[in-house]
Amino acid sequence: MSGVAPLLSSRGLRVGIAGRVFCRELSLAVHAGECLAILGRNGAGKSTLLSVLAGLREPEAGEVLLAGRSYADLGARASALLRGWLPQERSEAFSSTVLETALVGRHPHLARWDWESETDARIARQALASVGLAELAQRDVQTLSGGERQRLAIATLLAQAPQLYLLDEPLAHLDLNHQIATLELFARLAREQPLACVMVLHEPGLAARFCTHALLLFDDGTTQLGPCGEVVNSDSLSRLYGYPLREVGDKGQRWFMPA
Amino acid sequence: MPTRRRALLILAVLAALSQLCIAMALMVGSIAINPAEVLATLVGDGGGTAGDVVRSLRLPRALTGFACGGLLALAGALLQVLLRNPLADPYVLGISGGAGIGALLAIVLGFGVGGINGLAFVGALGAMLLVFGLAHGEGGWTQSRLLLTGVIVAAGCGAVVTLMLAIAPEDRLRGMLFWLMGDLSQTGDPQLVLLLLLLVLLIALPFARELNLLARGADIAQALGVAVRPLRRGVYLLASLATAAAVTHAGAIGFIGLIVPHLVRLAAGNDQRLLLPASVLAGGSLLVVADTLARTLLAPQQLPVGVLTALIGVPVFLFLLTRAAPGRH
Figure (tube, one colour):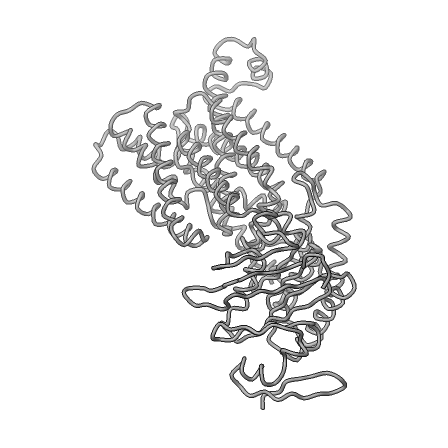
């Protein structure tokens, strides 16, 4: 651990909704270069926790710090330069083109009276290209398929270019090759830039393969946090999902099969 | 996404178009006045009947119409973003209903134009605060809660208006109906409402790019650096004041606030930096044209302008709906 403040940290965090508590006294720290997977059953509070970490919802207790400062202290715009958030659900009320939608990610980088420049357009096109949407740049978003919309949302996030990516089910609606491509993209960004990712995943094998750390949210409000090698194993996962899982190893990779 | 240059070009064309519409409104009427005479009057030395008609009748009426049309279109565009609903219009949140109660009460009590405008504004403000207070209860704000509260308050106001029409004395009915349908024949000095239009536009424009984000969803906007809570409240307040000002001056003129932002969006895209000022120019022009038709079509009888905006608006809207459908697939 270096002396630099972690990109994301929480102290004594308590998150809940409508009387149900998802986690108590949660303290975590995510540094640049790290990838944290959040695992848990449906309704275990994964998305709620992620939106608290993104500063979009108030915790019941405790605090969330972004590069050592609170969201209130930073303000909306400075926060947006540091962290990006991929929502689980999106709806487009108005039509706009794919490129326009990706350009929205540039908002925090522009001053009040600025219009998007050629540089911004280039960044947005690069982001579209990195998720394989370059050819659809002029299409109306309302004509896209679910998977294409998901990749467009990821491209918008890439155009925003934050240091911390908070991804709520980044693999939703994606086919198999785009699932792996997306995880490889974020794992590579985290390694090389370096920046940090926190992602809600449903496949523990992929979490073990692409993430450095994992946070397990159990139904009773307890949590387990640590490096994937320690936390993600058939015992903890069987308890997490309430179904016996068996670990299968192949070429250095671990997969978890329903027993 | 339009470039800044393209946006300015579109706005320049629309500005020229609105000047043309106002010029037409000054020339056409029971006395035809040719362009040279109109110009002479405007420059200042034109005398005689033509000068009087232009200066004291047609010019104030055209300018008030332009300002009210612009305010309604602007309020419509803002509310469509706030509610994330392309079918929202300035009256969906009950503001015109509140103004209607105030205005009809003033007419029944036999007040003059000033009293009618004053009570209409008080009614609009009352409905606005009521909806804001109810929608802003414990659980915070959601679009659907705001929309539902507005629709219900509007329905309640509608019932009160109907009740007032039912029990009002016969000789007041015509005035009440004209007010409800929207009418520009009772207008006075246009300065105040023009000033309000300029003010609302100048306050809204710096936030136009943030409104682009708000249109994509509150959480997405917040994550991208928009302070959503104050922005939403500001937009609600601004749209409500714009609607109240327009309704106070010209009655509940329909369809401008719904149709004009749609037309502009179809022609020039949904970038609020262009959409807001373009809607003002297009909405103003449309209302000036409709009002010119209202006072000339069946002259010397004057029609309520709200009937004409609806008669123009309904087929245009239906056309847009059928045209928009194939593009979605």
